[in-house]
Length: 296
Image (cartoon, rainbow, N blue to C red):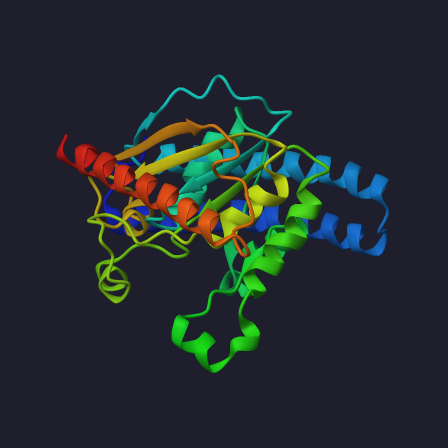
């Protein structure tokens, strides 16, 4: 509605709007998280998690209002009517921009159980976002480069341990576990550094989701293979702030959870190879989907 305003003026509307919504919601969630910490009883956690999830949904609704208010955005999202909010799902997705998080919350808002993001460890220190994520028991993943692990082998497997602890908490309440499998946002520089074979993607990292499937596969009703695309905006982050976000495309493929993708990734070498092949094939197809979306 306000996208007719000049970009230099819109940023003075969008930034305070997004900030105030996030600050209010995050502070409320953090306070409830502190109460959970002080009163470490399961019944207390269950009650408080209900209110935390309700507050999170208000954040998603507020963001949707702010995006539509300041951007001429058209949402092109696959039909999501067949999901059960009383079940569990693993959602894997490509990572384009920090806007991805707001887009995925719109997907989960009315159709999926409470989402839990696997977040980069650096976000732990981000004002408001970090403290709210902590209160919601979201796992912070610390990624190390191969060269760093060669010098510090004691750090190997720490991200998997974080996954293990988080999975234990997620078993008590229906959850959508969201993992940006590439580990970071795609960019030409990162594609070059990782020698990515894909045009639009970074190579997927298999360990985290393999462990999640091994720990919780019996609970998952499906794996949601989500592809995000912003075909009219090279940089969705700056576009949304300046009121220039035009189209958001979301494609969702539902995959069956079976013995082919549930196994011992770290001790069964043959399963590890099969799982990596399965995931790489998904990413090859995702790259083709993005190529088609960007030609239309």
